Image 1 (tube, helix red, strand yellow):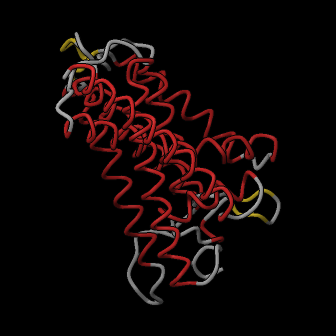
Image 2 (spheres, one colour):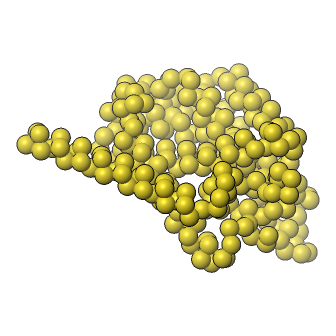
Image 3 (cartoon, one colour):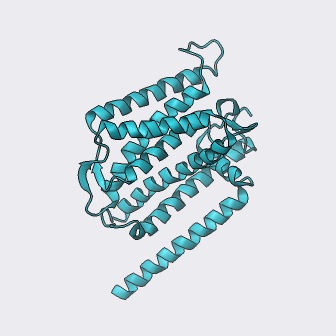
Length: 267
């Protein structure tokens, strides 16, 4: 019985890897050409990609709009920073959470104000600007990353502890400083900086979705808190990635059938 169970598990794991490889190949073939074209296809699934609300390399809009570019770069910065702090699962202190709530409110206010400008004559607080979309998006993304990482640690790792992952003002200040430098790089409009940042922002969409779906698969398989190393969770992360890519592909297909183009809305 044990050998049968092991063989079945190995067979299912192999099937998962083969199916994931086939999904990746199919997605690469069917999406727009070039590296930025593939990133466009990721952004296409989750972002309006309106050209006038996006930064551009020359006359080519980035894969994500200004707000989403900031949001996913902010999330990447927060995740990368926290990944070096250990397997802590405690949420930030109330004071730091208050700052994150402020970021959320700023994101919401700027988003609603920006949306109202679709309607001529509608009241608004101020004229929307891409730099402000980038800034408020970055704050929102930092909050996403700060909240996701401890939840991920609580779900995945064996031996995680309840210490706060982000516990000091200095840590938050360091994250904000890195984010400010990244935002300045985006605002520089330098293609040598925009190109890698565009790729990183789009790939972070896949990182976030893969982490979330990995947690879902862990809970469905009732294997919470059984992983001790990154290598040990390869299978569940592949399952998360495959689910994330499947979601992106379905949303790409649905939008393309509706619009008939890979371009952003109103382009």
